Length: 638
Image (cartoon, rainbow, N blue to C red):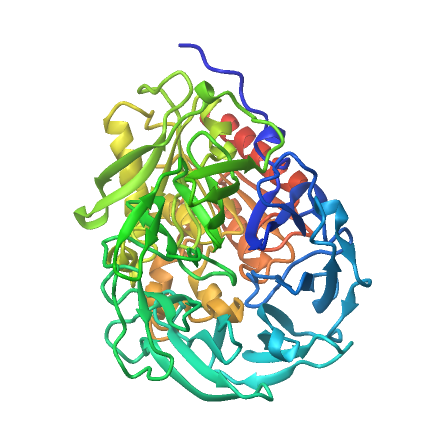
């Protein structure tokens, strides 16, 4: 069987905006688009529900750039509400890191072009070195409530919507980190999540509630769910939300799975939570950014995105404990929002790229509007991921998605192993044109859900505790060996690539196994001791769990360090690094590349002056993919 025409890098990457945070506002749908062709600028669009053929209105045109940098990863830069026929927007603009406000009318019109701004955007806060994000609008008090990160700590703050160039007012000082605010419908109660180093929020976090006085001050703040870092087993909470009846819902993982539970009474939180929907499936994901949403109230029931063995589905959950699957064709779901029998989410599947899903739950109908203007590939050309289970580190059953090369795999096929970032993330099932770039060139691709990945329960996630640089490495090597043994890959043409934590796994695989013949690293952690001492606040103690407490376990850090064992790497490596990266500082990549050069290992280093941790500019994304393919072709004869 002949190969299809190779997919150009300019088609695989750089053309399609990334959709995020859809929201239902009455008969309107609002969403965010991160646009790689505008150097990663994020903007907001709105149109009427279901009118997929109409032109949406851009609410935040250039130069506005919606981006929060709280904890550096940010999230939830825009808060939008519709009340009394007026649309209110509050956002963080990356141009000055300030909070801005604008209101719109005309929502009774036939389409988005009828919307009219009441006034030009108004800057609510004065420029400063702080970062704002993750907010909600408190209509009763005409203010924004959210998180500010400054001077090495988080605070909950309020910002008056009727003042300009103000300093945010602190309403609560958490012990360390805070986020994921949820305000009750009557504005009388506020819930949020807190966590403290060395825990990450998906390891151990607390659900806190407080009552709001008429003045807006918080009183009676107390923890009502979650775990304390001192407890033997951590408990993580995710996405608190208030239901219209005043009850509170949150996901937590004391059962070993992120399951939803409900508290029926806001008057007495000492009474028991209701665990109405137990399942060996996940209804949450690691909270790297603000604004993540896997559940929503649809007006009658809870609508939940549920992950089962690495694939997502939608379920409707009744307050009587009932559960029913919502039939729709997508198995990669994120950013769920619902209201009055309707729902929206960002979805994809193996043959359909990311897009905006609109569901009418009463009629059981749906529409999906892809982010891409046109399909990049014919369906019959797409390599569909196959679920691959194999014996990984310590003989434990481990999962990956395997994408056969165009034309079929045989013992001469090159193989690319992908090690995802996080390392608490997961290899997802949705269509990735970056994967198809390789399969269209005759490569097989295996995207590994190594131990530590999300989507398979807490026990699977905890495999990496103390084992980073061992478990993930063994799993990636075992995935490759499984495909070699099945005569699906050439042992002399096995490459591995990854970014951030996945870059560390890539380098560790090159150091401590003999499976791989080339590697590609994007903003890679090359020395965990440097990450423990040089990185940003959010991840400053992350490695306490993944490796061990620093500096007490210095020897273990050195044992796991690719930089300290650079002489064991005997194959070519290509590096890509943003010079504005605050998570993995550029000198980490410089030191690693220099160590390999001293050993006469072929090395390339590509730096990008305007990029940080994660590449947003389309020209950079394309350059990275093309350079990686050229490098592998040169050194692996592919």
